[in-house]
Image (tube, rainbow, N blue to C red; front, top):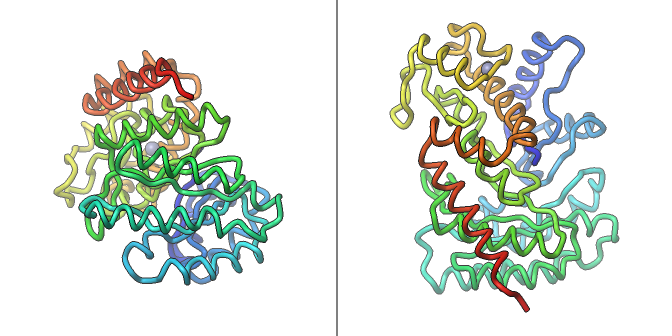
Length: 345
Ligand SMILES: [Zn+2]
């Protein structure tokens, strides 16, 4: 499994982050190996920076579905502009198809209408793109029931891409902008990933990527995921630790548990986390950029470590550090076993 870091941030922030990274890692002038960006809403100059780094950093273009969902742009207009942008920037690694995300609280009729318009994109958007780009298109599969996911999967295959993306997580928070696991959405993810496994399609998960979540995704036939959580958490004063999740280190968050310097240091040792950005706790408290780079390093290391972690060990560690996510992982394992045992036609 690999991580695409969201870089929909100001150019000056990106430059500053890369400078701090280089101070700690001489000779490395760009931290990110994979990045996701919304080209329709990219800040000035960020796209150019990523183009310069294209040999080192694989870039995924996001469709800006969140903005369609917010009514800031229509699906038709997004589709027209993305078609042009993708044709002009065929150097990128993956191209997300335009979609209308379903959000928690949508009525049944609203869901059906959104799914229909996203499915129309599966058929119309790829037309005219050369095979080389078409294979790299990434349709997003939405749905609130396994039947809806199943129907979307059937149509999404018409795109002819080498992979499919899952956008079916529950949404919450301001403007429904935060995705999270629920038992129902994990069952839908199992349906999605089992289908892709059978069809030998690669899988991408949109907008999920905390340290506890990825310990679940890693065992669900997920190849790639993207997240802005590492930078968002840093802005709210939170620092990641593997398997644990986000902990508040500044005393300024009311959504995450505050941990003292001594407790953070104890947890850091216990989880085996090491990076250069959290060695000085004072700096970690004072600088959101150091927290962001620590969070990014935590995820990058965790992704590598999970490749060699047997599922029994991951379950054990989640039981210790984050029991709710241990239940989520067990649910995924049970669902995948149940689906594997169910005959398909
Ligand atoms: Zn660290």
